[in-house]
Length: 129
Image 1 (cartoon, rainbow, N blue to C red):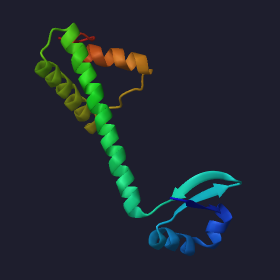
Image 2: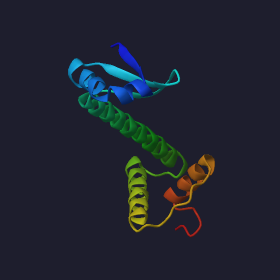
Image 3: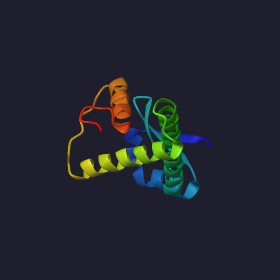
Image 4: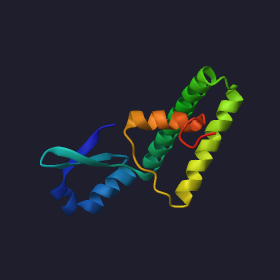
């Protein structure tokens, strides 16, 4: 679908007209600032569709990450897939509980976060089992 391009100034002058073209004409509008695209205006149903697609992608990525972690746990800790899944679920629940209590979880560099997460999940971190 071709997108109409308008400047921020033009959008400010013709907001209602631009919105009506998007809503009733099925158009997409790209808003530019000094020739550089900044935002897009799309129909609300299309936005909802895009958000649903994005949510499915995020959930699929999380499932892939969880499967990868289960594979590593079963290979390195001699856990069954079910046991590994239960350990992960417990860790997820504990994190949600802590977040619900307002406990601040510090940001660690990515590699350190992954190492720490693996240690905690298998119970070998400091204060572990």
